Length: 190
Image 1 (cartoon, rainbow, N blue to C red):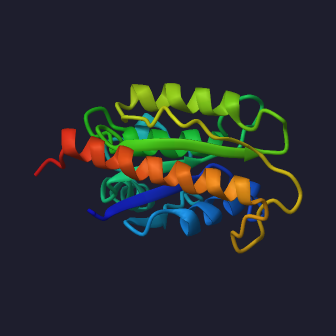
Image 2: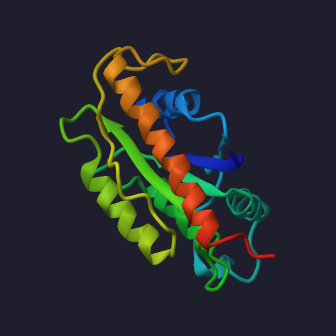
């Protein structure tokens, strides 16, 4: 099996985010062929086209980190029925200026956890719209809207409910298969 580099972006900047716990669990449950790396966007300034002619180093480094990956996994909460502003800002940095979009032709998947019963369904639809515009092939199934309950995932990423662990393990296996299909059809450009 081919190994793939998967960068993951955690939509919340909170150090106590339940989506950070979910991301930790996903890295533990992922197939061994997926080399998982968090790509932080905490230090990015607010994007403006005024930067297009002279990107700050932090934004260049972020964009290069995205470009080095075979795929991107978005693990996001839902803020006011949309993705967090910091995540949208990060996507704007990586996809600008026009013609230098780091997400183009890069496999992606979206997942998220919330204490609400419908998980992050609305935020995920919002994010899927943005990723479509960024020309990022998206894994459409299985969908994953995690209803986070106290104790579901520990700080070190252990999932307490076996059926949830199995679902997440299968989700990551499906993502691996999706990445393989995308990389076969859209190989890396030289």
